[in-house]
Length: 221
Length: 221
DNA sequence: AAACAATTTTTTGTATACAAGAATAAAATT
DNA sequence: AATTTTATTCTTGTATACAAAAAATTGTTT
Image (cartoon, rainbow over all chains, first blue to last red; front, side, top):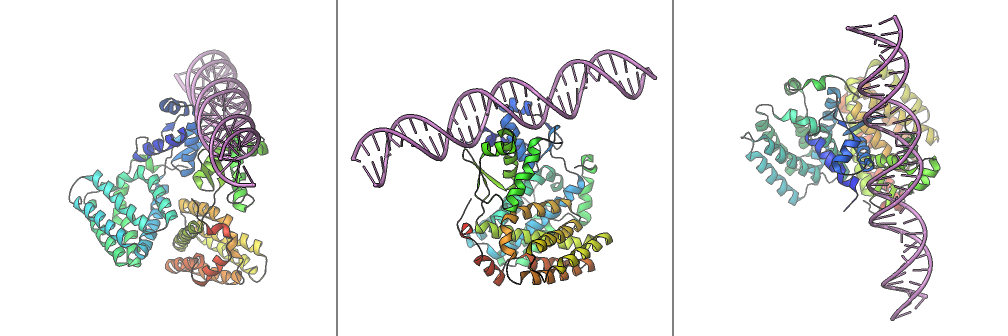
């Protein structure tokens, strides 16, 4: 058993990441303390850490809110995400082990099996898993951690992106090519495919914009 | 005036980044509280945030230390740093404004003026400034923030790298080519040059390894 | 003298109390 | 009635007090 703050932090984090606590929601220390059955101290500790990781925004003397992100921020974050994922893919193509190749193929097969269905949430899960395996195969633990953290920060907003009609099918095809490239050891191709896969640009970006709630159309800190 | 914790945090951060507080140093809450003339509460607040940003490591019930990094971690972080800087350069080549071009050229001239000297510290400063301008010219505030944060985390260890004989001269030549590429708008070249510039590999890496104190040759968390 | 056990001392983590600033409500002025 | 001013309430930030765990010290046994 660890400290109370260390138990509270991941719960809050999960609530933010899943969207149970929406961006902009006030995080009242007293209310949270009551909810978790502790004093304000460990709550403040958790909020402080979450603020450093970017999921929570603390405005001095004005309390904490779930971090609200402007459209500009979101685009910027996706741009970095695409690059880091591309780096993962490039390194994975060079460093992946035989055992990891097997896992990666299996994950793709599982993912692909849902590609013709409308089981968005299940596909989303398996999709995460596939990408996780690529992160791991990069054999750069720091990179892995960074990408995961950025993905966590994006995830409250990411669900907006996935529901585009026909997206799952083409996404799965792209995965197939990417997995091939990594297993063949073609790092340049793996990098390029990932960039194209994650990037939000062209028509796809227009679609993305059109699904945005107005929340994102105003600037923020 | 902001809160005490918000004043203390950057001071501690600076001490860590500059190496005044060396990796592995215990950060005793009571001692720090006395030193800053406050209670333990704001100290703990600052330490918690620093732990989330990676500069401090908090081991449950065992106190905080300045984050110690293994050689493996260091290599991993440099690998990511190289990639993020390359992204900055690529974006900068596409998005830099005329005013920023002027600034960038001036920064390079200032940097170059010291390249034939042995004023390592001054060169280091101007070198940082030049890279800062490239980050800014990427016009991606999130990326800029990420790169800066990673650089902060590397800086306690980075001084090891710069003192290689002849390094300043060749570094400055590389800068010249990079600045040219950005100003010409050649994003692919800017990206490639940056990758080569920052990367630690080949002979240069061997040199680097040979300068490492034993601290880095053991694993850590 | 070395190793183990028990006790004391430190140090961390949480709760509570209080002070100061921000938000809100009420009163007063135009 | 609307707006400004004042008073009140609420919330944050810091200090202090206390409980529990880890580290250090002492004492004991072999």
